[in-house]
Structure formats: C-alpha cells, structure tokens
Image 1 (cartoon, rainbow, N blue to C red):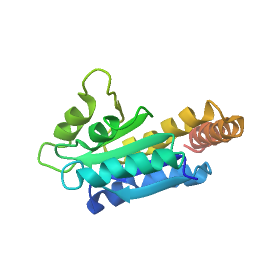
Image 2 (cartoon, rainbow, N blue to C red):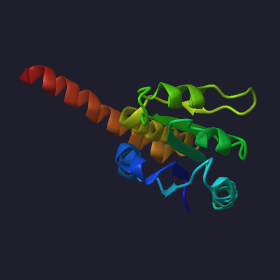
Image 3 (spheres, rainbow, N blue to C red):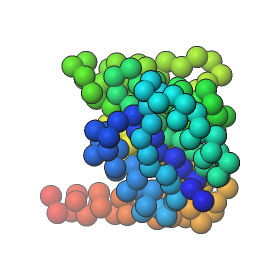
Image 4 (tube, rainbow, N blue to C red):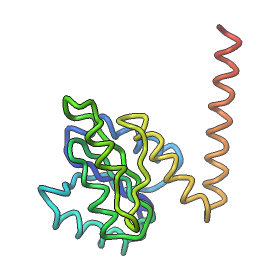
Length: 160
C-alpha cells in the first residue's frame, strides 16, 4: 500500500524529481511515481487522486513547470497534504512555476518547496516527517539519517 504519491507533469521532469523517490526508498516509504497533467489530463489527475486516497496514500507530492497547476489541481481534490515542487522549464528560470505553486487560494494550500532537485529532496523529507507523526519507527529512521548528515559535516570539516 503506497503512503506517498509523486506526480510529475511531464516525463522530462523525471531526472529532476528522481531524488525524491531515492530518499523515500532510503527511508523505506512506499510510493507511486507517475505522470499526470493538470492541463492535458485533468480527468486522469482527479481519478488518480481518488484511487490513491482509497489505496491509503497520505501525502501527495506534485512537480510541474511553466504554469505549474498540478499541485493546485490535486489540492482541489483532496484534504491530504499536497507538497509542490516547482520545476525550472522556461526562460523565466522557474519563477513562473514557483509563483503558480505557492499562490493558492485560502482553503486549498500547497506546501511549496524549493525549485528542482533541492525541492524534490526536501519534499521527500517533509512527506517523511508528516508520516512520522504516527510512525515511531519512521521517526527513528529520519533521525538516524540526520545523524549521518551531521557526521558527514564533521568529517568534512576535519579533512579540510
């Protein structure tokens, strides 16, 4: 049973969003990773949200560029947390996607992360933290990974 759904607006976003899936794998969190579009396949998007909610998905992560309405379209169909990753896909350097993702009407929030791969990584970490509210074993895995990050900084400082 998947706990997280990762939606991308386009196949071209995969290399940017893959780090999100990698972190979920590392934390042993089950997920669905697929493509759906707020504009090109709105019916597919709505159907996926309904089906995945029934299957137990607790957090939706949505990545899109340009007009970036995918996270908002998902937020309109669920009250589960929706995390948005704006993707740089135009000459505007991702600002268009960032604004489209962050500027949601009251009552339909999207937790908006950073652009591109950093946002993808942090979306996974934030989804994990949300799930860890009711999963002490996951909370421990998150803390263990943080300790590894701290140790790496210490090691890097000593070897500089």
